[in-house]
Image (cartoon, rainbow, N blue to C red; front, top):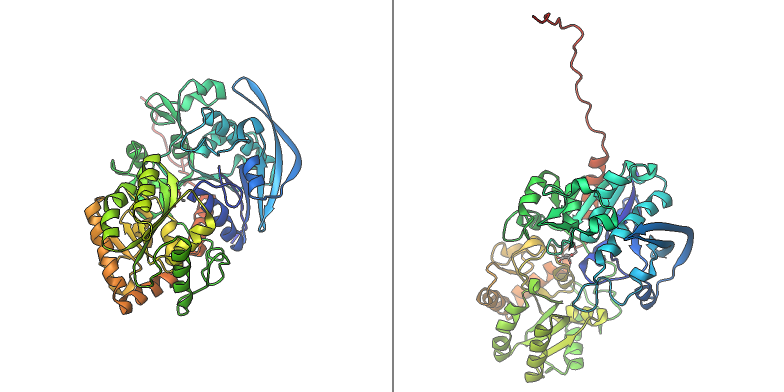
Length: 503
Ligand code: GLC
């Protein structure tokens, strides 16, 4: 198979800058593509404060790209970082990216986000054209890079190195589309002839995700079920009709994990290591967390866990509706997350009321997250929608059995006990209701209380292949298909046909 020159363009990637699952995917899929023999460069904004905080060494490159936007010239020096063998090209524009947040202050969005990412998109295209020899694939992610496929086709065809590149646009979450007032079209020089309902116009405004969907050669989303769901009004976020028009180029590919990084047998942050067949360490992890969090130390009590952004999408209301009941039944709860302040308050209040049974850490701490994955018996993911979800993959890898709403990637990656007992790795519930959630949790608890059943489920979860291997191959195949020359059209012979003289 030919070696491809692939450029990822995205707004976040581990370990440089992260707010969510997008960063995990952009930081790990390229490793798997490299292992398949391809060359991958990742282009990101130079988020000065995050690079410093995350101890990322960077080197200035000789190029500075000059870009006009919003009646102003912006100078954008390029930098490079080599992290675990992966090459990142970073675009500096301190006025726009040297900030505390990636997209806004906690819980908010910066007013100039369209300027920030439209400028980044243009500079990234120029950088891709100058840094690499010939780009085969430009792989863009989420609304922040949605303009790239459109700009490439309409305004960047004079750059020989990228003109023929095929574009792949991955939707990680359709709920964030990047919608902005139309007056930016002129301020940013966006192509006006695509500003209509079949292009990037959306109720009179600019919609960056529509630009990506319209112009990309292929659209992917992060699980097969989510690829179906977004064609329906329930999940389509008002783009279901538009997506249907483009459904012939839409496909769902499930995310993987960096399984070397997420490995309970070697994870140094854990009180003890463990693996399928060598499970003793998991009980030590549970005991260590109970102790550290001030919970009753008890191996037999079920420890329910949740690690999540506290947002409407994640079904935190369904958790809150049940939490008191579960605590009253004697279960323990360990929760890590931050987000909507009403949820933060409600969880803090509960943790104060049940200090020996409930632990709530408000914020994000990766080491603590690992300790909770390792300590937990049951992992809760009651999402209203979930494009893929990574928490359930991490949980299974750490022998923490997921109870999930049967939606998107949760449905595709967790095998339900009620459907195929002999293969099950967790429990599903269908309706987004507190009651349905409780029924599934109770089922998990009764399995937990039957050690033979539990150890089988847990072994299957621990042994599940959550690596990138299969999905990276699927992406690579898709890239190759896009690059195959289109079959030649048959030329109709016209020479031998005698044309009747016109009367
Ligand atoms: C978004 C989605 C999540 C997905 C992640 C990576 O954060 O909400 O479901 O796993 O992107 O693709």
